[in-house]
Amino acid sequence: MSTTVWEASADLVVVGSGVAGLTAALDGVRAGLRVVVVTKDAIDAGSTRWAQGGVAVVLGDIAGDSVGAHVADTMAAGGGLNDETAVAEIIGAGPGAVRRLRERGTLFDARGTRLERTREGGHSAFRVVHAGGDATGAEIERALVAAAVNSEITVLTGCVAVDALRDASGRVGGLSVLDDAGRPGLLRAPAVLLASGGYGQLYSSTTNPETSTGDGVALALRAGASASDLEFVQFHPTVLYTGPAVGRRPLVTEAVRGEGAILRDRTGHAFMTGVHPLADLAPRDVVAAAITRRMAETGADCMYLDATGLEGFAARFPTVSASCAEVGIDPRTDPIPVTPAAHYACGGVVAGTDGRTRVPGLYAAGEVARTGLHGANRLASNSLLEGLVVGERVVRAVLEDRALPRPASPQLISPAPAVAIADRGVVQRAMSTCAAIGRDATGLAAASDAVEQATSTAVPIDRAGVEDAALTLLAQGVLAAAGTRRESRGCHVRTDFPGRDDVWQRESLVITLDEAGLPVVGRDAMAGVA
Ligand code: SIN
Image (tube, protein in one colour):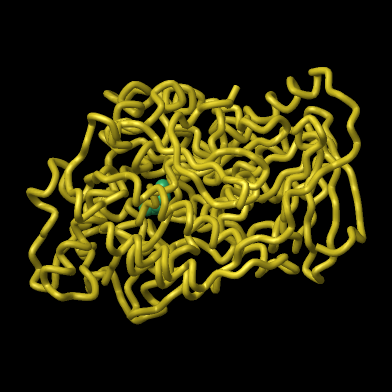
């Protein structure tokens, strides 16, 4: 990168402006911190606003439901890889976090004073609160952005985070960035929070916006943090099928099935019956894999979601209705053509439930982080909850860490500026063909070869370069982990190892970088995390 042309300082730099980032930023300024939020695009352009279903939370007013039941559902969905302590902490903190979110102006759907609930795959109760019918993320983002613009937070839009800078002791002391004009800048800060979302753009077809390119995971790895559970890329079972299109696809929220819709093949057969005791409301990995299998068995490009029996569909699901209307489908009379698409990174930067990583001064919250909540397959609507809870907790950790004595070492060191960058189209095709739902050793090796052949070493000079470098590193990391995990578990389906291996695989794989910047697979995900 060329010489820094602008510089600023803060107490806390937050990368990303979704639910986790803005929650932390708002709590940070309330605690008296000078907070700068850095975001690649417009402030509301991240994943949060696309979330439809809602926030899974036990508020104590649903007979028969309990925090314990929500914990049990999360663990069951996660395929034995969740960290039970993290699950209990995050889910237990949910009611308070949702109350504070409402105090910040989020309006959930309610009947009188009582919040309405829906149900999604893997949940044993109706416990998902929602807003605007199926526009929960958009409403949360609206409220948080409104609070942020009325606060002391400085927001730098059109700025991509490049690298965390560390002092001689290894502690993070700032962040290098590139603005939209490609001008390098430096933000000095003793705390950097990554809340930059996931890496759905590794795949050709995804529910994620263009910003989801894994920048935060790549940055953290280059700064010496570890990542874990990268192989568990969750595919949402139902995005609207409109032909072999690529890019962000419209989600058809699982709540449609929660409220009674049935998946059928083109002959009308309800193929989820008998696949799992919860049938259409099985956990997401089970439904996505069943749809993929049925498509292969019948040679079809999509399956169909039959919502024709649902009362008041347009009012309850306005976002889905609008997407369907754009392609001439009326869910009141037409089955909705659906197919799976990449949706959520269950893994990410290894962090505690307070966002601390193993690198002092570097924190991670939301989809970019791997706290242990999701295990091998995230339970539906647990992600907004995690972003809220960890977003709040991280500020407490930052305040505690500020009080620790630190050596005065103003010289900041950047990782080597030249990184591996492959062509994005090659990466997406390789990952979609060989590392989506259903992987085997031959395909994973072919994908690795394709990525390697398309890779050269260069210094990113703009947002696209930073994103391509991140996608390249994430592809290498996902492929390395997926190749090492020779079993099927949760979202990771190995066609050559179709069963679970609880003898040695019931633990997370951890990725760090070697001296050459290449991912190395090891074990003990929480090593070095306070
Ligand atoms: C959905 O509404 O189906 C998606 C919710 C989620 O990913 O948790």
